[in-house]
Image (cartoon, rainbow, N blue to C red; front, side, top):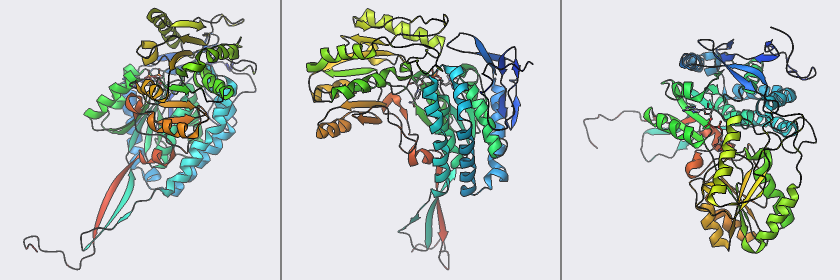
Amino acid sequence: MTLHSPFPADVSPVSPVVPTPVADGRMVYGMSIDGAIVPAAGGGVIESTDPVTGEVWATIPRGQPEDVDRAVMAAHRAFHNPEWRGLSASARGALLRKLADLVAQNGDWLAHVEMKDNGKLLAELNVQMKYLPNYYYYYGGLADKVQGATIPSDKPGVFNYTRYEPLGVVACIMPWNSPLPLMSFKLAPALAAGNTVVLKPSEFTSASTLEFVKLAELAGFPKGVINVVTGYGHEMGDALVSHPKVERIAFTGGPVAGQKINEAAARSMKRVTLELGGKSPNIIFDDADLDQAIKGAVAGIFAASGQTCVAGSRLLLQRSIHDQFVQRLIDFLGDVTFGHPSDPGTQIAPISTAPQMAKIEEYVAIAKGEGAKLVRGGCRASVEGYPNGLFYEPTIFTDVTNDMRIAQEEVFGPVLSIIPFDDEDDAVRIANDTIFGLAAGVWTQNLGRGVRMAERVRAGTVWVNNYRSTSITSPFGGFGHSGIGREGGITGIMEYLELKSVWLSTAVDIPNPFIRR
Ligand code: NAD
């Protein structure tokens, strides 16, 4: 093992966590099971590639079903261990808040690890990491505020009340686009509710979760309460989803894996939360403030190179402003600056993974084949100094009809489909003509129209005159194929609790069951 880290000398954890070993300039990560850092059964590894340079910067264990079993059984034991089970909800909340403090102190480190893995702009990751502690402060605060009820029962001689109880082991499965926020959306409420967890980050972006879990140990969470297994979904996913000791699955990812997980969960009667994909409409009326709407349209689809579940990938433009808005969009984008994600001048970072790049290229070819008109981009960007970087030009298609695959299927990249509409009814019809229903944007200066559209568009989140506002305090999730359940807000913690009804006799004498009254 050498000491050379792939990170600059001044980038390291602030807290005294166990350092990750380095060999040949690569970080060598282990899984975290029952408080120990361990390799995969069989010793296999997966290489993590930096999407900017194309170089391998880390290895993670290629977990197997045996590893999943070890992690789930550790979480199961931890759930029944008085060290965790015996904690009051207030004490659990305090632990979460301590973790939040540590996350706040180590945000810079976590942002750099995340950037190496998925190539997002460091400036954006810094904002994400600055916000990340709030997940743990919020649910830490909520832990001891979940209350049952006393029920005004219609039965005499009994007192009836309800209580909320943790479920047991929760499996959390994450994608690669925003690893730590999407993980925290699950982890924070699951722990606040008193469960134990097995985290399964994406095979492309496991490093930040493996660094994060060290902070949880430092915060004082007992061994086995938080476990991390790494590896391919197709090799170990089923073992996790079908494990008899897993009570709930919280999944964020694509519709294909989501459907498989839902089927497996149904077979073993597990509860599920599914946060899946989208084909979100961003609808611009001719009475909108177009200066603002331009920014909303660009942020909607090109932030993070379109690799966000809520990407406003269908831009619905009222016919009267269609041509001028398209031109303004092209002008606004101008010659965007590509570059290293840590460079403050970089506007567009690379696509996170090679398979995702291939998918984008495939959909651009499909759109052309369907007759959509390419008016910007449609190709890779070559960036000086990064010949192997996965850069792709912001891409715009006009002449898209809503029945085309480019309008119906999620690309998860910087590809915008523009569709004209005539009036409110037409906009609603097009917006809702999709299997998805994750998010929608509406741009109008007519307040009544904004409220009407928010009612009529079928989506879990609707933004009027803004796009992408989210908060840990608010529920998030999808209609239709965009998912099941909600994360965030007070609803978010309820997903990790089971409701129990308790009946207590207040009668002096229990009636004789053989004498009917
Ligand atoms: P993916 O579905 O390929 O993988 C997600 C995770 O599931 C990974 O950890 C993977 O290893 C695992 N997995 C794959 N097959 C599995 C199986 N059969 N059983 C168990 N686990 C399995 O998704 P991705 O490419 O990593 O992420 C992109 C997708 O995520 C997009 O569709 C995007 O819309 C979606 N997403 C949704 C939200 C949301 O909140 N709705 C947020 C971000 C991303």
